[in-house]
Image (cartoon, rainbow, N blue to C red; front, side, top):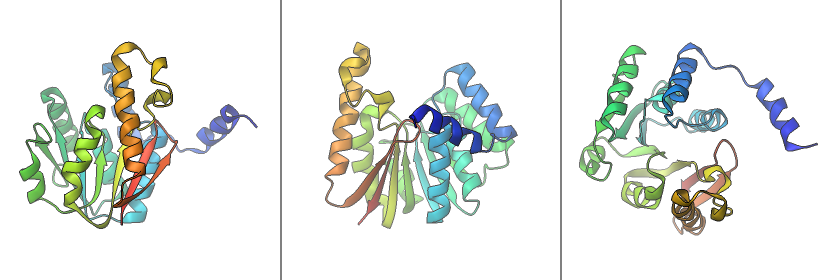
Length: 212
């Protein structure tokens, strides 16, 4: 049976987005804001339900879609999220307030690397979710992984980068270097001595790295 038929079958089994989810998905599509694909977000939420984290760090807030999804999956968790885009910060804070999550989700504005001390103060973290500048994935991992609890997990989105990691020549010129950087990151993760990583081809690809 071909993959398209299997995907169609699984899509029919998936519950439709709730009201607030659908509103943010439509907003992201309208304004061309990249958010996590539905398959990926469902997997992320299921991983969190299994992990039962108390503290989550998210690198890359955008409009707050994934932070709100994580908060829904694990209502008892506190979430720290970092964003440097001022327009995204304003929208995300509005959404956190609108959906009564501003006490559970703390948005730290600014560059992730410049915000390390503020992030460190609120740690350590059971889960770190990386979904910001793709060319900086390795730096994010190296910088923030010391804040991870023992047996914690780091989840990285977009590790397949629309399939361009397989053959970067298929990407337009401006994306080739980025595809090569993500490919390098994936191989680096695969061989990391302190983490066990599995690469899952759901959404745009997700890497789940468990601290040994």
